[in-house]
Image (tube, rainbow, N blue to C red; front, side, top):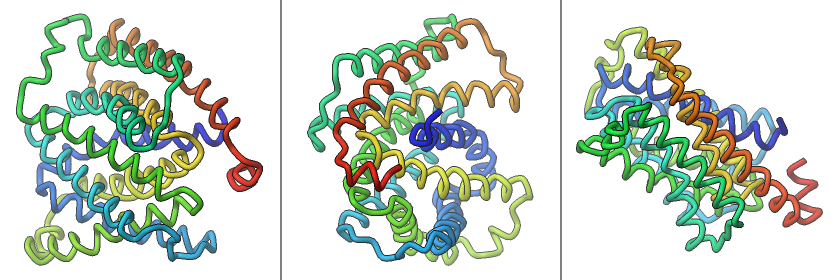
Length: 304
């Protein structure tokens, strides 16, 4: 697997496990408290990596665009956490797998990106795979969009698509690591003090060890490292192409559910996973060729 593809696979691996961790944290903290702690953990890690790599901490991009990205990041996390209070982790994983459709649509209109027929074919095949995963042999399961929590989660697909578009714009010509740090830091500057003051420090000190372990995983791996790697992938590929990797997320969610929750892996789940893999391969292969052919020699020197 090439390094550029690894930048996209590792984030969805972490995010596939994040649904379990979020459920654990929400037993003791509300959504805003959880998100604030994730920002508090992630921002120093990203800053330390930036200094270790000897990068300038000051971004070259538009501060208004960075601020918009920070607001979108918080809104996305809040919507998703709010929805997970009313629906299951499994439902969340399947619903969020529709995000590439929103990314492709927004990228078409906002970034003027055009997907080739092969890429739309890959998108369609992967979507069929998600439907098989969701149905799991019982087509009545496709009525999962039947609660307020499910609808809230679906709306977070739109916020994630918006974040992907903004990140694609702001990482052009500058370090994705610096951009990721500032988006998270700007959101944290607002919400961390608010959460500490409104909830009180004692509330966070009183949470259980398993909740703190989950928060550290969510902040360090699912936010700091995953968002950095996702931004690296966005610098190398078009937004719609990057979004296709989100289809792999339900596969990881399925595996973690089997290992950690004892959920059964059926032939339908395997068939769905296979279709998702084929769809992503078809779209990713074409997207990689197109991405490389569109790069200038300067781009190639900067990203290799």
